[in-house]
Length: 209
Image (cartoon, rainbow, N blue to C red):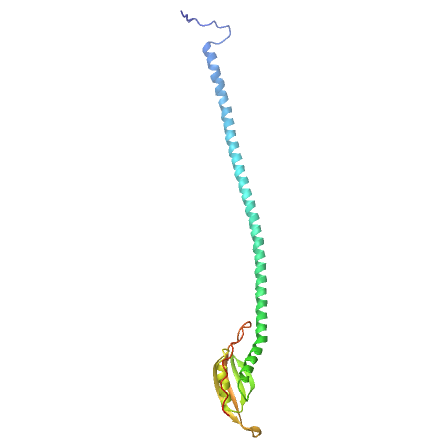
């Protein structure tokens, strides 16, 4: 059997009623709410500040890294410019050497070719050889007209001479000896310094005397 006591407990003198005692914790909670809100705001602000600081630090590291990379690339670019200048100087030096080599070997090669052509005919002598804009003007002396024709044929058979043309032939009877002076013109194609001139063709038969 359960008994329920419905008589309220006696209240001591000077104490408020029970309902006032029940409202006291609620009042205290209301007083703590601003403090809790302030703590929460401080926590949010602190988190945002920490996040912003981390972002700024990350950006600062990226900027420093970009500056170091830019400095490295600038050094490489400066070194490349130095190498390019050295390469230009080396190429110019090589060009000068090649030009000097051609100037040194060119006349020697030409004289060798002309000497080989003269050796294949009899009684022909060269008086002068001049070059103008890649063409040769050759003046010579021969005892027979047929020898001049053989010399022209010999030049035409060599790859270094093209467009061989006889300009003039006239008789010279000085010193009581008949001879023929001639002028011929041809295009001279200089061979490469490392290449050899094409071998001459077979010698033509000697002219009848």
